[in-house]
Image 1 (cartoon, one colour):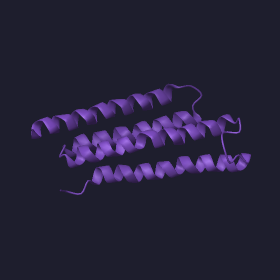
Image 2 (cartoon, rainbow, N blue to C red):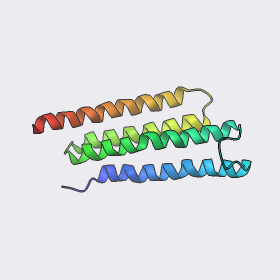
Image 3 (tube, rainbow, N blue to C red):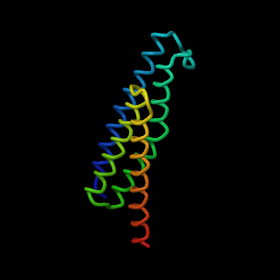
Image 4 (cartoon, rainbow, N blue to C red):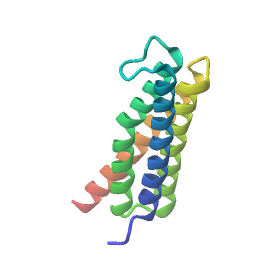
Length: 131
């Protein structure tokens, strides 16, 4: 089995994004002296949710990219999937942290859900082809 370079690269990018989101949350907590909860602070609340939402969705995104890659999908299909998942997570995080409305978050979530369906279809086709 060839080494899954695209999924591995996505994992590295996600690790960096996770640290950035975590550090932003920690720094805001420190500045507010808020070790628990959000201290009623909207900025901290946004940072907590951006970090939490990433932690909720990134694992499935990584698994999906990994399985699609090791299942033998074409390099371009895997690259499209990985880039869509990365863009989706970045857009959602930026929308949570900096946008006043929901449009950027919505674009990120739409892109992510579309990528999830795309990856699922690739996997189902591979399973049906192998059967």
